[in-house]
Length: 214
Image 1 (cartoon, rainbow, N blue to C red):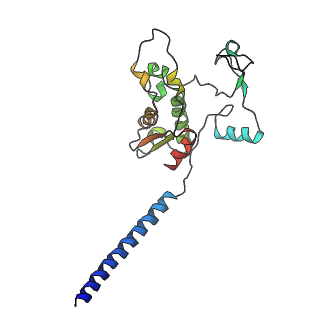
Image 2: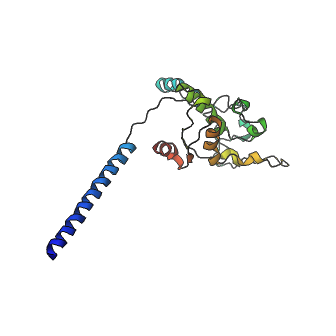
Image 3: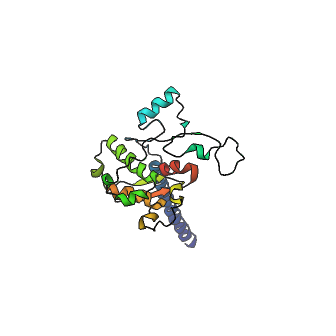
């Protein structure tokens, strides 16, 4: 009788374990299915040197166009900083680069941003607002009527603009602190009325890929 009771107890525990394993396998299969679900790209926008749309960028690639050019005078006076000798301190030994056009044409009022705040706003955040608006339009969404349950997952790094020294005597402003990475995705969610999580992935060169993975 004792052996029968022990065997029955062991059989019951074994059966419970098998049920638990089966349930875990089902949960694992469901998790794998979600993680491997295809991603549909239904709207794109971009800004590249000599290419401000996906179509223009594709044509640039197909044509083999070199987007590197002489540093524009409106950016900075290259003659004041150029020296062909790489060993010279505080100088640059190249006169060329790849530059975006019309980066100073941001319309802050269009996005509900005051001109005062726009002065200290990182150009990356300005471009982000512009291309996000365009991407939503290309996806067939009215930007200000997009579903509120829209997550924002971004890859971003190198906030050099916030490190630019201010002229002597410039008073501090509350807007000087809005260039942190955490403000970037939050600003996008706020502008378009999104009400689900947003975050910025900062993993150096893999940032954009990590954001897609998330």
